[in-house]
Image 1 (cartoon, rainbow, N blue to C red):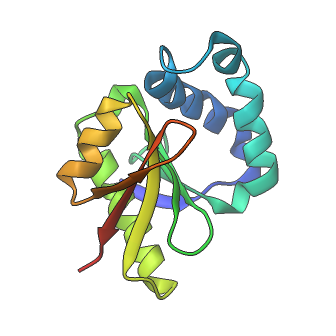
Image 2: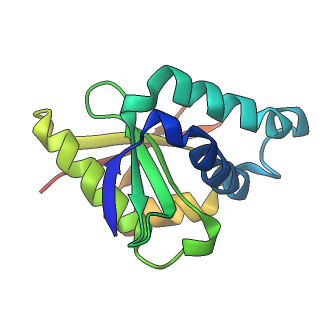
Image 3: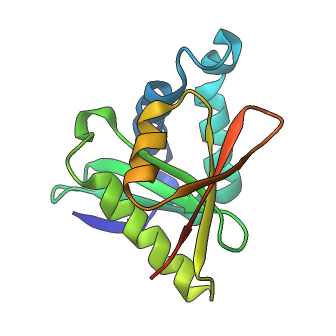
Length: 147
């Protein structure tokens, strides 16, 4: 497995992988209209922030998952394709994101997870994140101190 920046010409393949990951997290949690808009939302995210996406690939180049960071120490996205759940991909992506945050000079990672996304909440709790609060828009705020 290797992590590399997303290339703009890979947009369609990336959106297909990201859509499978996104749907596995949010179908049943979000209104159907928002789920239906997901392909457009993901394509727009690539158009606006392509350079922020780091993709995890297997040895033949297939996308396994991705992450992106927001400002400072905020982990904006971390998704794994459902075919690769529980195979270490999330851990590889999280470790890379944490290393990038350290390079930015931070000793903590912050993120938010939609309430009800139990798979993500379990993953982050198992990797050392603690709940620090709740937002008004149904998100759980989490933080991890980097060692």
